[in-house]
Image 1 (tube, rainbow, N blue to C red):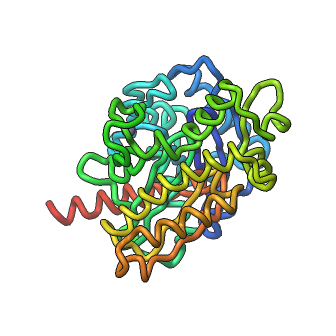
Image 2 (cartoon, rainbow, N blue to C red):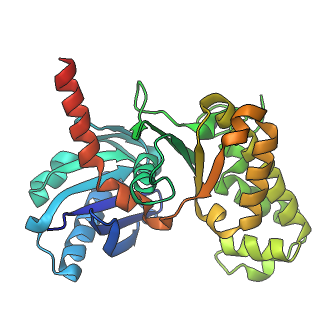
Amino acid sequence: MPNYAIGIDLGGTKILTGLVNKGSGEVLFSIKQKTGKEKDAESIVEKIKLSVNELLDNSHFDIAQIDSIGIGAPGQVDRDRGILISAPNLNCENLNLKAIFEREFYVPVFLGNDVEIATLGEMKFGAGKGCNDFVCIFVGTGIGSGIVQNGHVRSGATGTAGEIGHIIVDAGGRPCGCGSNGCLEAYASRSAIEARIMGALKKGRASVITEYMRDDKAISSKMIRKSLEHKDELITQILFEASDYLSNGLATIINFYNPELIVLGGGLIEAVDEFYERTITKAKTKALPVPASKIKFKKAKLGDFSGVVGACFLEEVQKEKNTSKILQD
Ligand SMILES: [Zn+2]
């Protein structure tokens, strides 16, 4: 009998919910909801409830067939108690998601961090399958990473390991959302790249990208790819600059952690091959020769679903943690 779980990837802009066959990693059904502009704890909880109910309705599954619900949230989490401590992007603080949803659905609920679940997904069924020591780096609104050590995602002393987005690549440089200056994500995240493009366009720089943009002025990874294919000067300059900074960050990880493999994910990495290839080539030349000689790079394999799949394995992670605690006591 296959085991099924529901994985929820709670993001700053969307909530992706999926029904997953844990044996194969297949996402049988999924629902995507926008979090909307007016975000608060109540509306987030309501949207998750709706998503889970709709998912069960659409799939004709009964909640009794579900082993667990796993949620990955963008922020700091208390994994043992299932509390979302703080998620500035969602306007949520001290939200006991475990208690709320266990009361609602009568199944065990587990909470993790958004990058952690994406890393777990890639480890179980994606680009990291079969590799015990690797680092997953996701370039999105920010830049986050998950560290897999001996087949386990390392959470660190305070549960915040892997904050690669805040390694400083330019002392005293651009301000970062964390309050510091010169952090990697202020240069190479999707949002940083978008801000650079919008800023340059506002100043009157010409670019072919304006031909692809719609009224909402949103910039997609596809638009960036098409502009690069057209050898657009502005987009090439901005992307290459971001790629230089990102390769600095990667070289640091190669030297410091000496992983076998780095898995890179996120919309821009997936869609823009030139950005990916250029970044990994530069990273290898910048890193020390010995750790660089063994490093492999792969693109994340599960795309949007790495988090949803990984969230279904938070139960396993928590159980292992509890067992090791008992053994230590
Ligand atoms: Zn920062």
